[in-house]
Image (cartoon, rainbow, N blue to C red; front, side, top):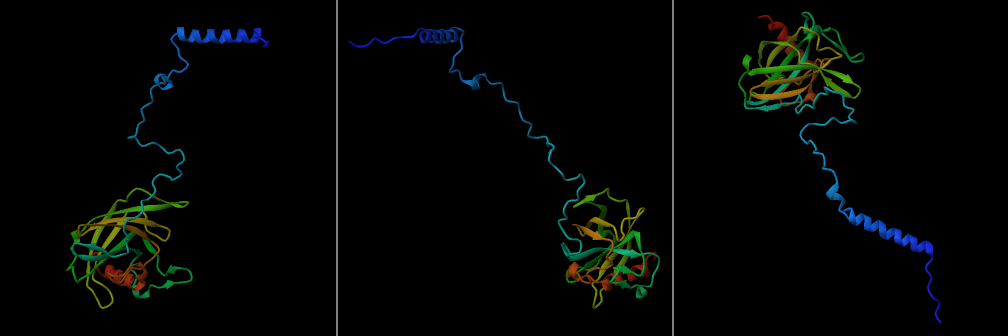
Length: 245
C-alpha cells in the first residue's frame, strides 16, 4: 500500500493566502504584468537651443581667439602681396644712425614711445602700383594680458591714424606705405603685446605684435624669420623725416 501524501497545515495556509492576494489584485483592477511605461510620468522636454554653462569649464572669459593670419607674413590682396608689421617708435626725435641695440641685455639705446606705433605695409611692386591714404580702411588694436597660460583680450583702444607717406623701394627694402597709430593710453612697450586687426586693399588681416622688437621684414616675400633691425630703422628714419609734413 502506497503511503498517502500529507499536506502540512502551515503550507496549506500559505497557499490560500497567496491565492487570496492574487484575487485581490485582479478585483481592484491592478495587474502584476502591467506595462510600467504606460504609467511612467511624461519626460521633461530638453532645451537644445539655449547654450548651457559647463560646470567643469576652466577657461577664463575674454580669451583671445587664435589669429587666422600672422601679421608679419605676406598676405595676398586683389593688388598682389603685402607684408604688414607694427613697429615700436622711439621717443623724441632720435637720429637713427645713433640708435643701437645691446644683445646681452636685449635693450635699445633709446626708449620707445608706448603711446605710438608705426604700421608699415610693404607691397610687391610686380602687381601693385602705390598706396593711397584711404587704402587703409580700418584698424583695431586690442591689448593682450596674460592669465597663467591664457591670453586675455581687453577692450579695443581708441586710436588715431596718421598717414605718413609712401617710401619708395631701394635695392634692399621694398616700397611701403607708412602710418602712425597713436592712442591716449600706453599700449605698446617691452611688456605689451596687442592683437591687430586691419583692413587694407579690401583684405582683412589679423595678427599679434610684440612691442619689444624694433624690427620688420625688409621685403614683401619674407616672413618674421627674415626680420631685421635695419629694415625697421629704414622706415623709422622715413617716419622721423616726414611726420608733421
